[in-house]
Length: 124
Image (cartoon, rainbow, N blue to C red; front, side, top):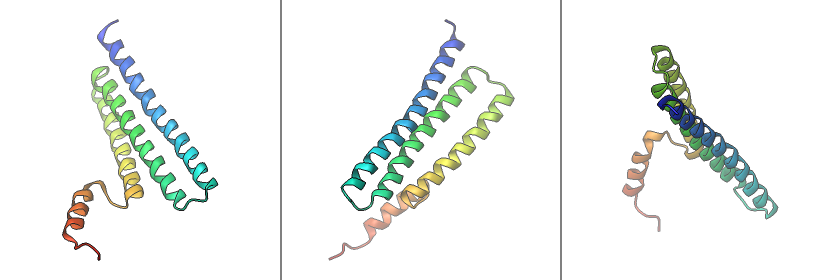
């Protein structure tokens, strides 16, 4: 086995891990939501969306990693790097959109939100 075939195999494995993360996350989110609905618990929809969104984010990050591995290590041409850049931009936008949906804040606002929470006096 040469270097390129090893890297291609690693890229495919990371790709598969990304797909598995999304599929397993969606299945678990659905199972937990159905259980919560049967118990008539409150906030089922928001927990379902959060769990599903985090699973998708994890899967997207793994898929981007696989694209980077394959593009940079296997076929480092200007065209393939351009395609990789477009893929990374699209997936980054999707990740940020999901983060906004899950937390209600952009990813770069987390530190400010934590600092604001520390500055506020505790409710009595």
